[in-house]
Length: 455
Image (cartoon, rainbow, N blue to C red; front, side, top):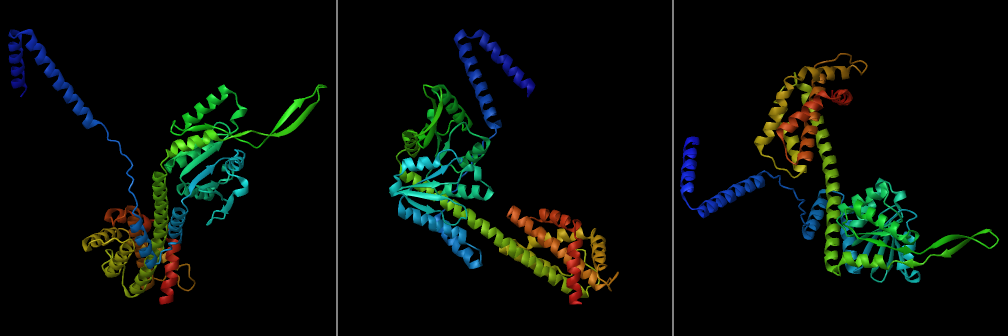
């Protein structure tokens, strides 16, 4: 191929030397373009593809059906149902909700007093929380006054983020450059994808150059994605002045309020399209309801799975009392093991094929060939803790051994399904091995008690 290619190139070069100059130029240009196209395609193929987060919209009707289905299973759907009830309520009110963040001294209360006529404000305490979160309502406007960031703990922070998802717009009040605490909260707020406006309160305390520096710092820390409004929420200020005799005096006087720039910034992010914000608000609340349903379902499944494991462990102990030795491949109690695996899968609404279940039993059973002596040793040591039993062996020791095997298998299957979403034989075998070789002395003693009662 190299020789043929070389011959062709030399032949073409010979013809080009005899051809007019314009033919050589055109031919060279075409060759150059083809070469550049090849390099471009090569780079495109090698360039790593960016993975964009795919947002799957939640169908409200399907979510409501899912909640009803999980309720029939016995799952605690109260929190998910509460979100849907809140969604229905806010749809009926047709109010515009603003989540208000800020530190204790940032001027949130003054902002609310300036924005809403105090004599006509309706005040509610947010339901479903032991923390103080107030809702100030006036006509079609509602301000969610969240506690100061200084008082945030893990519970209150999560409650505030949830309330942000139920709102239309977020206003973040600060009176200086952002602190580490404020930046941490803003980072979490950005994940909600809600329109965010940063308001620099008490801006009149700074000179023009200082204002520009703070604005630059705020935009830099937020990647210039959110508007910054210079405002003054009013309140009072203390002025120190000196009289003609040189004596200093203090005077408290009201500070002039000006929140017009903030209102303009809110209008800017709203873009006079409340319908889009309402749909986005609805989608956020549906997502929140789905998350709470998933959490409740996970807790329920895990508790039920542990109950299944405990039940079949007891059955294994009872069935092993007449056994001579624990089978290294679970043949003796294979039916019980298969039923346990199938029941755990059914809880997670997974329907593995019979061959997949058999593969799990076979692979974990194969591991027992090298672990039987260890299991028997642990079981025997556990029995020594009971007076009058001593080094008792036989049926009781074997029963404890089977109990340990079933407990290890059940928990291995549970972790595989809850983590991967499928019954994975290899992952189950690995976790089964860890469970067998892990701290099993306490479990063995509990199983020994059970075996002695059966005996």
